[in-house]
Length: 264
Image 1 (cartoon, rainbow, N blue to C red):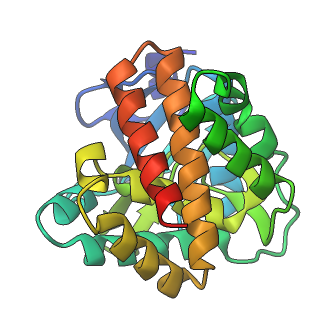
Image 2: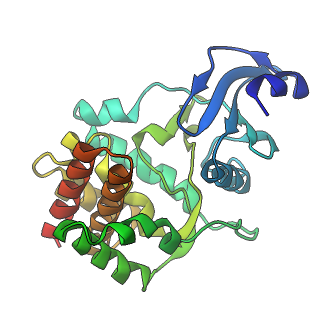
């Protein structure tokens, strides 16, 4: 169903311009006196993310007001201040601490059964397929295989935790949006933070060493294992870019993977 069909169905009032992404349609709205965001997914991956958002039940995440299939009515969060802007303007440590706090809200133990979500081995299929396309891909896949065969502290994961997916509520603080929804090792959720907010920034001399050490302290992770996940995840990101024909982005992701491996 379209965005428009939910306006009458859920008695929503438009409150801004519609936004179209590669996988979803979004519209700022008002609902029962509250500001909210209507999101209608256009991919199965996004629908799985809805499943996780419902399961999170507003703990560490934007609240879900209504859910029907591919449609979600969410608590609307503030786009500013921006964690990406913080990181790029010299406040990398502060942004990383916020991201770690947001991850903790997602990862905290809950009483209810986990949602049915794909596991990390399924998520890494593109890297497996790319392993024959050069030494860098083969090395990243080898690292991924070792990690996936010995996952630790397994739980529901956001799956796409980076500076753009943690926004602020004036009342409730920093919260996550737009999860992919996975089941796997907790350390994996921190790898994408170190590949963001931009490849050039991620590759700045000393940045990966400093921020990975900070994350390891803040989140209670094994530093070397976190770096291994960065090496594997950046290789996976490169494989995705290659599938989409984005050769330069793939090269940058492979450079991050190589840097992470060099620090092991």
